[in-house]
Each structure stands twice: as C-alpha cells, then as structure tokens.
Image 1: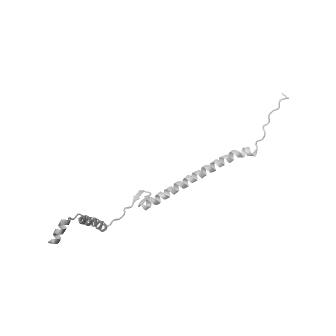
Image 2: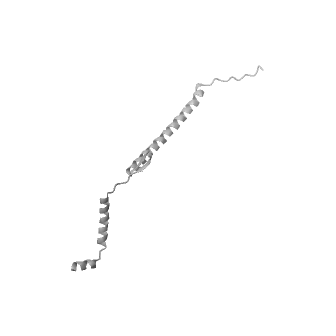
Image 3: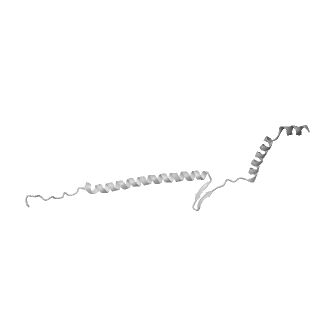
Length: 104
C-alpha cells in the first residue's frame, strides 16, 4: 500500500549504549566501597579485641587460645596469709585475758 509509511527505526544514540554500562559500574563501585568499609570496621574491632584480651593475658594462636597465669611466689602467698592470720589473732584477743597475763 503506497499511502502507508513504513516505520524506520532511528539509530540508537551513544548515550543509550553507554548508560547501562555506567549504571553497572556505579553499582559495582558502590558495592565495593560498602564492602571495604565493612572490612575496615571488622579489622578495627578485631585489633581492639586482641589488644584488650592481650592486656588480660589472653593470646590467640593458631592452635587456639592461650591464657597466661600470673605467677605468685610461695613466699608472697605465705606473707599475705600470715598477715591476715596475725590481724585476726590480734582482733580476736580477749581484754580480760590480756590483763591477767600482764599482772602475773
């Protein structure tokens, strides 16, 4: 039919070719940035926890967790125990018995 015009597709512009690629790259860049921020936060939390646990004599190794025990010497332990025993003895003495001992 001669009186009807056929539709001719207009050539696609460069913007319509590049726009999906730009959106994809923008999405990947945003995803990468968010992932990097999460990674940085996790590493900071890990370092802080490791430092605080190290202050409390807890060390993480490949084999597991190693807990350090503070060394207490026998002499220090006996001195502290004897000190408490002497304090208890002095506080528990009876004044009547002390007066009787002095008068002998």
